Image (tube, rainbow, N blue to C red):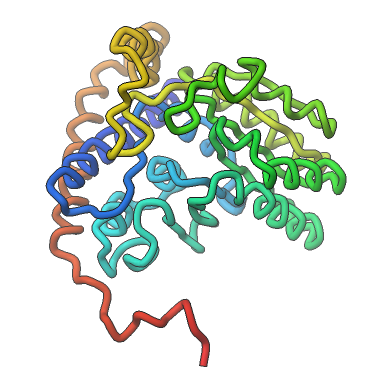
Length: 318
């Protein structure tokens, strides 16, 4: 990986972090309603994996998806406006936090029912195989989904029909507030792949470079051989399950220990170590991201609410 690409990945993670920090602030000010599940701490996974896709590949996710939408090329403006429920949002203000969507970016939305989107990803991959269009579907899910029925249904079909899909388990150690040791008999969620059978790998989800290369290998394989794969990324979220969750089931020491492996910090260290000539650009990245996020918040504030006359659009067909 050359220095410029690493710098681009670093900027992407900084944008994710600052976007969600501002979203959290807006939530406490009651400018955002409903649920708000933050990705803070997991930025390397979405950044690295989506960077390995082609623009026409499909991305499908669960409810912790704002950062993935940004990584896919969605604008901070349309993302923040959607959180604010505005007509200029990526789902026209109708989806909110858990249901970002972009047909133009092949971002097939977020899904609030745990594990229910896994068979949907299999269906997307089946369509690609049927059309022979060379596209791969990348599906993000949490560790809490690997014990859910639809997860097994989707995995079974993907293996049986040899579908071009890559399932990425973002193992942050907790299914909502339940620690992994109370939901799985092993710390390695990727063992679920052995039952189908399906190729698997476990990846350091704090290192954006490792995240990128693991996803690239799996995606290239899916595209070339039409074979599915399960990737488990070991990561961590610094906030609770959602903004409504104070996270009291974790110790402060545990959270602080994980922060020593913060994905932004590790990427910055790598830049300074391997590409010292690029260090001078880091401050500029932070400055440009601050401007971009501030602009997104202003845009969301100033955007109109959805027209009440459109309430039945996308719901009923006459």
